[in-house]
Amino acid sequence: MFKNILLAADGSAHSLRATENAIQLLSEKDSGFVTVVYAVDGSTSKSDVLHNKDSKDIEVKRKEKLKDIFGSLEKANVRHELKIVHGDPGETIVEFANENEFDCLVIGSRGLNRLQSMVLGGVSHKVAKRANCPVMIVK
Amino acid sequence: MNLQAIKKEWFSNVKGDTLAGIVVALALIPEAIAFSIIAGVDPMVGLYASFCIALVIAFIGGRPGMISGATGAMALLMITLIADHGLQYLLAATILTGIIQILFGVFKLAKYMKFIPRSVMVGFVNALAILIFTAQLQHFVNVTWVMYALVALTLGIIYILPRFTNAVPSTLVAIIVVTAIAIFGGLGVSTVGSMGTLPSTLPIFLIPSIPLTLETLMIILPYSLALAIVGLLESLLTAQIVDDMTDTDSDKNKESRGQGVANVVTGCFGGMAGCAMIGQSVINVKSGGTGRLSSLVAGIVLMLLLLVLGGLVVQIPMAALAGVMIMVSIGTFDWSSLKTLHKIPKTDATVMVVTVLTVVITHNLAIGVLTGVVLSAIFFGAKISKVHVTSKLSHSGEKKTYFVEGQLFFVSVTDFIEAFNFKDEVKEVEIDFSRAHLWDDSAIGAIDKVEMKYEQTGATVHLTGLNKESSLLVQKIGGLSKNSGH
Image 1 (spheres, chains in turn blue, purple):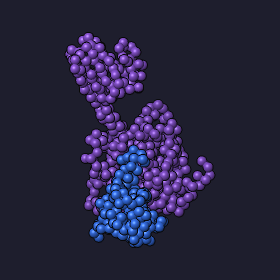
Image 2 (cartoon, rainbow over the protein chains, first blue to last red):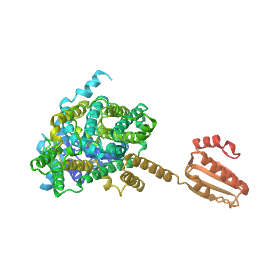
Image 3 (cartoon, rainbow over the protein chains, first blue to last red):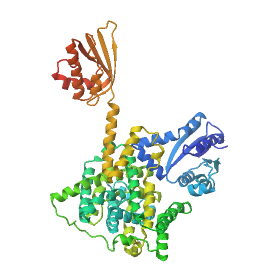
Image 4 (tube, one colour):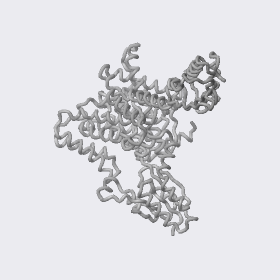
């Protein structure tokens, strides 16, 4: 169905479910390509800098966080690359999606109720509303 | 630096920098006032500091997009100096702090910051958060429920408003709403005005009026040293965070020099020592500020607002400021360290907790950091000072081989010597160092001692498997004793 998919992931369980769905969506595994976008916000930046010696260690730690996602992609033999963006997750993911051309954006949903998403802010909802390409929210 | 680079650092993001600078200026005012109150000086001193530092750093800082000003970490270090000696000594200490920081930058010492372990840094920010929080408790003494209600309202607006709109900074809205309630409700709560005077003019150049004697120097030097260390620590940590947020690199030595010059200038213009601010820098980058212009705009807007709206600023209730400071302390605390406390090595957790406790007890971040560094060094020494010695007796029973594993140096030599059994009736003893490393003359001395003791029992000792460095050391130091090096 799709050839070029953008997968928004942060290493959580719901982003892992989204990964499985992204793989399913690829029409041909060999020619398909998945771009994994991981958004690092200000407070994550702060705690990552605080807990790691230098920028190399930070990079290693972030890749480590996403290793299950890369594991699934590798197991399915799907070509992929990682793109780390900085800022508010909702905004930066939308920005990255709209700056580039993707057939589809796949993102996991935390499944928050109304109160939770009011307080915590629903990233997937924000992304679905503002991205120009088709968006698949995985529950 | 060529013209192109200057242009890029200043004017590549004019709109983003200007807007972010205005947002930062609005957030700087309540913090500068609150930090002045923590330090025990007029709000004017902190406001002048934030103005001067933001301005100077805009031009000569090493990390564009980073915001510096009067900070809690620095304010906490000044309390006793101000209480015992007064403002003029603080201004002198601020200038000396700047000079120390300039030297730090000139001699390119930023790279030695790596000797401060991460667990100490985590302890540092957590202790800072706790101190900022506890400094607010004095405002709750002998007050009515009105104070609590206003603080709760401030915090409520700060945390909930961003879910609906990010167009205006929620702290500003909280302060305006609470101030309006206090004024129009005639609540009669204590306000900024009751804590001291605010600036009504631009700061002017003045050399601090203190006696220029050795005695003065001895009074301010300990404070200046602590201020210089803590200021650089927080500034370089903030620079790293901004590096990560913007995915760019920065010149840490240039930043150290810049912080130093900024403090010298601040001291001459009646401001207290300051440094980079983590929270404000994050706000700046989030609001779209990445260039030097945002810091300049922040400084200028801050001063303009004070000159125009000074009459209103004095009416801000302390409850609103306390609320903002509680928000600052919540934002400063590293909550992830609590979640991972049981997962990280026990020694790291201990260092973190001891750093926090030391600061909370001494109220001095510099002492906390030093204690943390020393404790980590001791833990590290203890960890690598474990030597393992195993032995094997030959079939004939005449030769015994000892296998040494680990680092042999002044701490580990006692365990090393105790591992030998000098009562063995053997003719030959071999000590295999192929999995060990000798580090100092204590190691050589210990080997000499073992050799001598075996000599008394009539056994000959051979050393084998020494690596290159170790055998060089044996040749160099061990030349005095007869049996070494073979």
